[in-house]
Length: 194
Image (cartoon, rainbow, N blue to C red; front, side):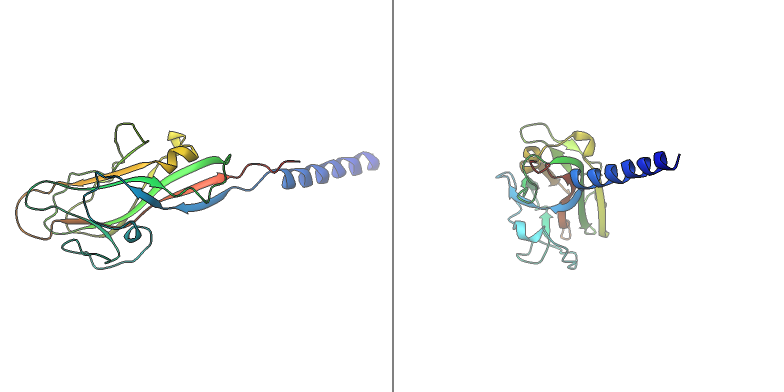
């Protein structure tokens, strides 16, 4: 009986050691935008949307103020259109288990609510995230879970994120600004060859 118990303990220990060395741990990283479409007419730089800067909410587009601002002019629309994310930190062949869009936005007093942040795989129709900035909103963090979309590394490299500021009426302070937009991505790297 004692010998049988030792054998079971031995099997448990060996199984645990085998599993701990053969299964890679999942890793979570932040993936930032690295490309914008020609449709983007904000004039803003990608460098203003990849880190938390916490500036005051701008009333107009200002270069290098630490946020990516959509500012509705008296006519037309102002469009933020990102069309790629930096996947260089994700090894090819990795299994992606979770993708969550996270953004931080603020809107001024004359911004007209009703516009929604949209997403799409490259070459497909835009779909709503349900994130709809409201007027006179201080800095607010919002998330949208994309995990159920089964995005691949290639999908993420060309993922589209779009927001159109179509505020109506005259006056100033019609901006909606984004401090950051990124993906919180969890993946398991491919197993090392034996």
